Length: 181
Image 1 (cartoon, helix red, strand yellow):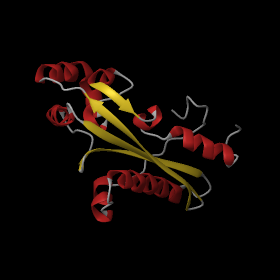
Image 2 (tube, helix red, strand yellow; image 1 turned 60 degrees about the vertical axis):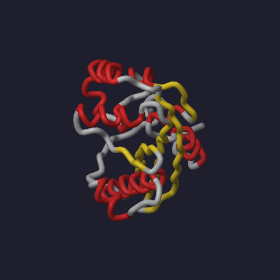
Image 3 (spheres, one colour; image 1 turned 30 degrees about the horizontal axis):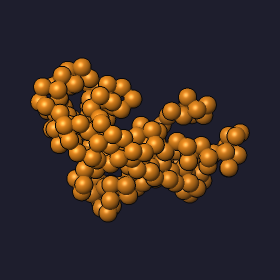
């Protein structure tokens, strides 16, 4: 998304145990968990690159009070889709920008997605067609691809659904002079 928006970047993965971080911090909501993880990722990378502006981002999925993580195998993907079938869930995407060890910008946004009621046959056909891509995203779908067929209604920003509240982030970059806009 950032490259498509004309933002130069260098990817540096943060070496964090996200589940442990969440367990230790116990964020009250899935949205707060996304914000916590985005800040932790940016902070971890920033410690190794103190002279750089670092962006961290994360996304969480919640169905009521139940939180989901990326499925580890096809059976887990099937269970996630089965649980989401016929319901409305929330995707929470957060980003944090860290410069000189300080959070200088943070933003979180929420989108609500309603999945069609899916039969076991449809779930299996989807998983067959999606292959390993079903394991790459929380909820076992990618809305920008084949996963769009699973939904009947979507409320919220498209970029938030893809995992980054892009427009508020670009606005920050423009205001701070990091990009011309």
